[in-house]
Image 1 (tube, rainbow, N blue to C red):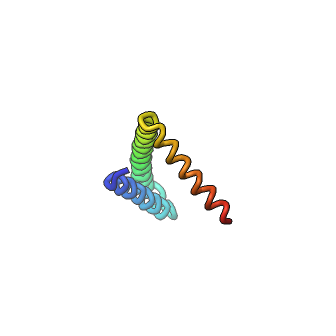
Image 2: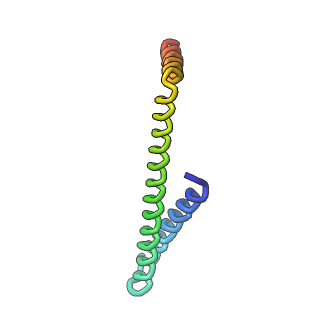
Image 3: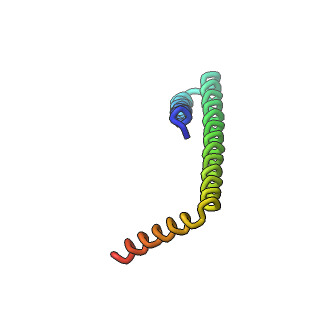
Length: 100
């Protein structure tokens, strides 16, 4: 996820928290138009944050799928190198576990 998307998501979440706090303060002793206005703002902020999170989730899923596809292509194009890498990683893990 790029920095712009992360910053946008964090700003949306901060807005949700701020609006939720305002809602709590407004409903502490009052009812009526002000409460309705703050609730509407909080609901809109929550909708925007959810949409941002869904987009971020979809973006991360697409990137993970692209990474898996690239790894699959590499293994198919370079099977012996992949076997060597896997053996080396397995050796290192076994060595590290054996030292405990």
